[in-house]
Structures are given as C-alpha cells and as structure tokens.
Image (cartoon, rainbow over all chains, first blue to last red; front, side, top):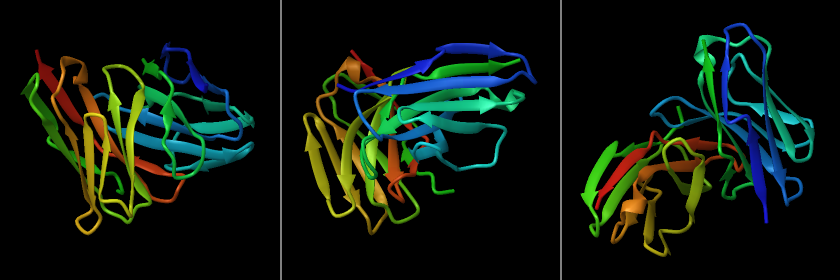
Length: 112
Length: 110
C-alpha cells in the first residue's frame, strides 16, 4: 500500500532563517506531488505541484521554492522565512492526473 | 480566484440527523472532490464525482453535482459523533491543479 511521510510535524523558526520541509511517498511510482499551505481556520492554497522529477509548477509568487530531486521526494524550501510563512503545510500525492489526492499528516510551521 | 466556497461555514446537528453542505465554484471543471479534515490533521479523500456525473454514493455519503449552476452538495446521512470534522470541496480544473474551498465545520452532538 502507499504511504506518504512528512517531517517534521512541528517547527518553530526565527524570521530570516532557512526552511526545508521534506515529503516522501512509498509504494507508488511517478506520482503527481503537491504542496499546500493552510492558514488557521481557512482552506488550502496550492503552492506547487510536480508531474515528474525536476518538473515544478508554481501557483503563486512567494518566498518559497520547491524541488523534486527523486521520483518520490518533494522538498519545500525557503532561504529566508517571513512571519507570513507561518501556517500548516501539507504534502499530497495523486496516482494520476484528474485523480484523488492523498495527504500527509502536515507540518505546522510557526515563524517568530 | 478559482477557489470554491462551502456553505454553511459551520453546522451543528444531533447524532442521527442528516448533514448537508454545499460547494460553489467559478470555472469549468474535470471533476469535484470532497475531503474531510480532523482538527490538526491531513485531509482524507471521501469521494470524487466527474463532470459528466450528476450523483454519486459511497456508504452514508451522497454527492450531487450541477455543472450548470457550478455547485455541488455533500449529504451525510445518519450522522455520528465521529463525523465531526471540517469538510472541503476541491475542484480539478486542469488535471493537475486543485482548488479547495474554505470548508464547512461540522459538529455532531452525541
């Protein structure tokens, strides 16, 4: 069966520090991968998606970047965090386009 | 914004009652999906309905889709306390981009 991992679960970082969140998927090949951010009490905002290694599409201009160095690994990064980067970050995968998405447990990021 | 909107924002019902929540969206879609999120957790996929389908069932869930009105509804029958969660609709616009609504917070009182 397929499993998606995200870490860390919680992260507290000072403003201006770098960020690296990692997401890995097990049990499937060539998944579509997604990064979302959820502000408190709000819906999900699509940040990045990837349909293959090295292929990243960005939804909104922001202080974040994403990379997909391996087929089942998706990394969210920032060189310098802002207060507004605080939120709940969710990684998801989909077995194919136009299909259901399966979410990881999320990382709660607090930038102080 | 292509993001959908759920209505109502919050819903409180007694156990055993039915819960209905609605989703409206703005653009043509490939499919529409409903997800559940328990507090502080990731989302769980509930059901997917394609643009050429009008109604779909899965256990106690019933989803309808009206593409002419750009709206969908999720009905949970015979609700249980364990159904307490936030429910989100997500529209698949391009096959790789999903736009989530703002969610309905459902509370089922035992």
